[in-house]
Every structure is written in structure tokens, then in C-alpha cells.
Length: 386
Image 1: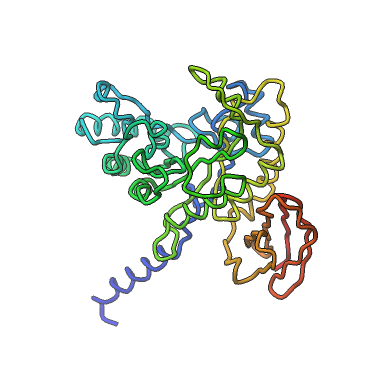
Image 2: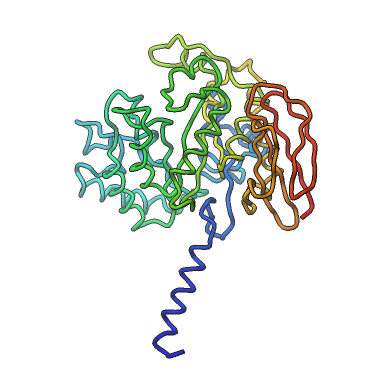
């Protein structure tokens, strides 16, 4: 091997090693994979020490925009605006450099530098649902403008950018997901919010026929596909899930909306969560806790129970994602299966994605016959030795 060829070989080896790194997970500065179990807020908008301790003890580990206390990690919101340079046109985000590029670039740079080391911050949070802004009534921040802002942000910050998108296309064609592709190229972490429990779900324009609980898995699979190139996922996919009732949300709107819809039960929260994970999500964040009524202890308790289970499964949730279709089989196609490996342990995450009680069912894993009983939208987790 000549001296000239050594650097080239080394570069190729380094490139191959980098490309082999899993892209499905958010990786912290210490190299650890991070699976967010997150909240957009606390019940009744509480911010006291007691609610922080209660949520953290339950297993939540990530807060959207809120102060990081009790060991929480958090996002830092890039202002949704309008910042002063765009006050007349309300373009919606400091990250969107479609107009006033020089001034907004300077403001974005200053914001990033000032808050780069804010306690607990691991991601920047871009404008919410820019593809369908707001609620499809007018065009939101452009994907090109957001890409320009993301480039500025990356030039001055080590933190990745996360943007949550509406489960639609854009304001012109909400049922056409192809228009979402340009937006998905902008951030380092992508998510979609979908809230299927209750009559208010009909307010959400969806390109999928399934509007029920199992639509969570549909949206997750689709987002993973759109975030992949030649079958290789390029960035983490999170899911933002329902932690509220549409009726309460409508009553809190200004002016009030006469929406209907109860909060999800514990069983529904658990199914939606595992439906997302089984279909590729490497993070779940619950929206709407501030709208949980004071006399509704069940919804908050359900969220905490699911968070506690996810906390106990952290080794599996941040472990190696194995090709389930190569390893596990169930004749009942309503049963979804994911396989995770953590050290010498293998975890089977299984869910019945139907409202039917399918009873005891056989699952074949690596030639081994297992049996599990599935009620409507039931979840089963099995830990097996490698």
C-alpha cells in the first residue's frame, strides 16, 4: 500500500463506519441513544416542584420548551413569531428566512449562541406544523425558507433541529403527502401529531382511510418511509400522541368550539404508544395535558402508567432494531410485532391493531412457538433470552 493510498483507505473506512451508525435514534452528546418519553405540558399548566417530581418519578424524561428540572431534558423553542422584522406579514417563524434574511439570520444566530448551553437543552424546536399553518387557512413558513434558517442554525450550534408536522400535506392539498417531503428534508428529527380518540378526530384531514386508534401505526410507518432513502432511515422519527379530550380542548378555545370527544383511556394510550413504537417511532411525546380537567385523575394516571412502563423498557427502546418480519410470524395479520435486542435479551413488542377480541394466538419466533392472548387493541411485551 502506498503512502498516498493510505489516507484514501482511511477515509473510506471512516465513511463506512459513520454510515453504519444507527440513524433511527437521537444520540446525546455523551454518545448515548435517547428515547424521549415526553410532555408538552403538565395538567392545569402546573409548574410547581411537586408536579415536576411526580412526572419524573413516573418515567417522563423530556419536556417541550419547559424548564429542565428534576433530571428532565428539554427542547428550546425557536420563536414561532412573528419576530419584529416580519410583524406586518406574519410569516410565522424566526427560522423561516424567506424574507428579511440578513436581519433574521443575525437574530437566529444570537438566539442560538445565547441559549446553546441552556440547562437540559438537547434539541431546538422549530415551528409547529409549518406544512398546514394554521389549520390550513393560509400558507405557512416555506420549506426553502426553513432550510435556509436550519443552515444558519447548524453553522453555530451542535444541537439538532426537531420539527413536528401536521398529519397532512399542505394547505393546498392536505390529503397529498407528497408536499410534506420538502418539509421533512429540513430538520434532523421529525414527528407527526395524530389524535384519533373522540369525535373531534374528524376535524383532522387525513389521507388514510383508517381514522381510528390504529391510524397511529399508519402515520408512523408512512413517516419512517418518507424519512428513508433506498430503505435506509435517515433521521429519528418521533410521534406526538393524544393526552386530552377534544371536548375539553374545544371548550378552552377562543372563541369556544362545540367539539365532542372524551380523553383516551389508559388502554388506548398504551395501544397508541406501542402502535407507534412497533411501527418505527423512537420517541413519544404526549400533547394536551394542560386540558385535563381537575376532576379527571384517570387520564393523568393513564399517561403516568404508560410512561412508567416505557421507562422500564428503556434497554429495549434504545436497543438494536431487528427485522421482525425475518424473525417472527403470526397468522393473524392484525397482530403487529417488533423485535428489539438489548445485550443478551430480546424483546417482542406485540399489539392487536383491531377492535376485535382475537383470543389466544400463536406467534412463531425463530422457530419457537409462543402463545399470547389479545383483547381489542391489546399490547403484549415478552422478554426472551438470546
